[in-house]
Image (cartoon, rainbow, N blue to C red; front, side, top):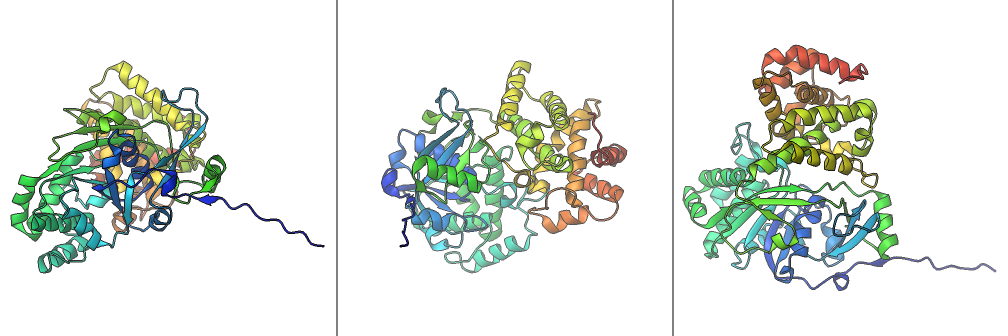
Length: 473
């Protein structure tokens, strides 16, 4: 006689596992893992969280929308690694339910997008769309030569209230046109991407898009819209199948929208809000008068090291940050880079040393499977702000800038197909940089980055050393 056994199917997460949905007062563009580990986390932990719901729209893809809708927009955040001061004796893995999302939408739901902007109760627009999402040119202005931007400008001129737009600047203007028409009052933008002076950057892009569509809107923006600069930091890799399984084992339910992250988190903000906001400072956010030093410290030390490892690590057979930083050669290169970049930060030697040690601890976290291919994306946007400023500062000080130039040389090999696959906002353009001989690639990359062509011999030698197995710094 054949026996049957019932399989244990994990329960599905739902709103009853968290707290009731709060009224939507924040609209976010870019429904990615980092946003859900960072902005949502700070909002969740604010003491007034019950009054601040977030409506989030996907970016390039509709990833996570269906899964989040199926579980009433709540999800699990799993922290990986030994806990910080809040949990000094905690386990290696800790989970919590995040209920900060009240609605999620696909990028194409422009009716809902306009509806939120027209709602006087909505106070804040946040975004995490990567450096490339703001569609800027090399000078930091809105790139009006991009076909998608031109299409959005034409569509918004022809039909301000119903145009189909696809770019982030186009969506911002579509929303602001709806808000002005509804006389819904002021609103504040809080961009959450790795860009120095991100508030000014967003102001420039939004204002220039407005001027191209409706010059009268730019004055309305000046009178009614605030722009906040923010520095964001929390390493958030893509979850692995093992991560999802661990969430189920720890919680008893399946969560295909789960997010994994590290214990460390930081958020620094600068600027005047035109509107109310959550009490993020009670959750650990810092409000400062000058954010630039914090942005440079993070961009140059953390993100710069990330980019160096992302392009040099695969040349030595590594796939993750943890593998790369525990390679003595890569670690020495990273430390040399930190020596160069740290000299140009307005922090004490002790502060920089402590920050470097904290980064080593974070990068070495064995629980974090942060793949280098994720970090390698959009190098055309990252290298100019993470690496190039330190190269220029070192050269102006009479030094060789070897570590920074090594990162450039590694990017050359990435563009030539010797590293992880190229995935870039300027894909067609950067792929041409990798064509021809190595020497031709080096010359083209130096020109692309606006670096002195006299650096050609140094970068060429470093490129040869990278694939020749050089072991010395």
